[in-house]
Length: 171
Picture 1 (cartoon, rainbow, N blue to C red):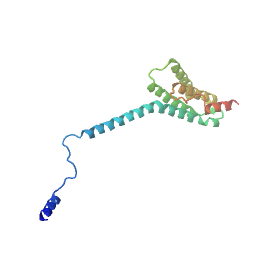
Picture 2 (cartoon, rainbow, N blue to C red):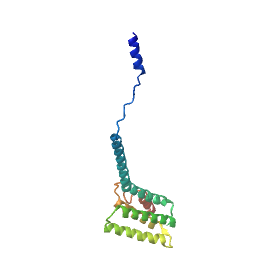
Picture 3 (cartoon, one colour):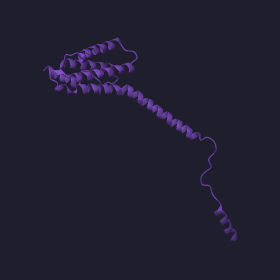
Picture 4 (cartoon, helix red, strand yellow):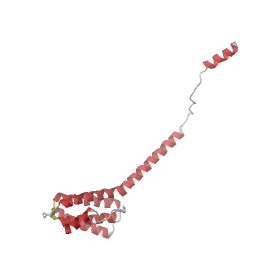
């Protein structure tokens, strides 16, 4: 009995290491996982930036053009200069987006863009007031340009509020 008690005491007095020993050297699994997550994050960032530049910018341009044509029902005969200048600024943004996104421009597109820019320059910087019909024509030309360059299938020129307002004005 004394021998049994003596062995139990020595077993209790021994220190047991609960955690396994760490193998010396480099923890390759940690580094491979970290690099993998980093590469996956960079890939997601590149995809988001690409899609943002490709699809988000045309949507923003479309929304801005809708906002410019939103208040046409309140206009009786002429459009104020700040409204025309807003359309001018929109066209400048559109032109810069074309320069960034399209390396090769077709002659027809360039011709349409230059024509619209000339008409808008005359409207924005002349001392004469801009008529409602001229402003509607400029917005429809801008919609057609946006449709030509858009990759989104639901951007249709001449639809929506601008066309409805023009039909209402003709009556």
